[in-house]
Image (tube, rainbow, N blue to C red; front, side):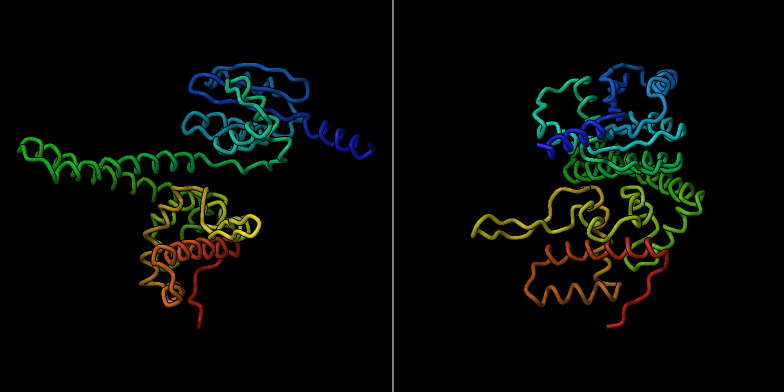
Length: 324
């Protein structure tokens, strides 16, 4: 009985001073766990100033979901006011809600659920992103959209038979190339403004198979890299094999979850690394000789490349070839 009371006290302490915020394009719904208060604010500079006054001081954590451009102003204002916050994956937040039996989904319910999530899971405050990193994220999102447009235009051009349509598509493809080049220049320029970020780019680009733009992409998609252990890095990218077994049944290990865009960013560097990076070439050949499928072997190289990048950033050193 005493243990139950202690658990209750720990729960009550954990539930104080946490705030959940449901972010939408126009509004911010906030919930406080210490008094159960709820309030709604406009998602603009004036509304966020009012939100900060409502939050007050001595808050343990503010939790909100990553919502693309809609959470940017909130994140910057929280960081500017030195308010600790955690930005969570929407899928993880929904799974937590289901786990605690919250099946309803409204802005107010989501705000309360996020506040509880931060307290119960003991989430750690995150390092605020710099304005340059926010800009680079937006540029990278635009670049990826252009790549999709480029693929779609090439597909249409391959089957187009009308001359005017072919002309339009060819003109569109030329413009897309120019736009991508412009974004790449902007990414390089922004990455060089922060000396710490620039050093990280240099370290990653020293690994054979990883170019400057890939290095920038990895740091944008995974700003935590270099600040965690290797297993955490692989898991965050969805490259850590997950065991599947039940009773006497033993299934195959497979990767799942994680950041899909990060895996896409690692695919081509891993493919190149199997040819130009001596360490990766040896590992890849060993896996193939051991009977592994090429796809499985390449996934292992992606994981090894990420783990190597994480280790180099953690120790702040450039890549050097490992002697066999």
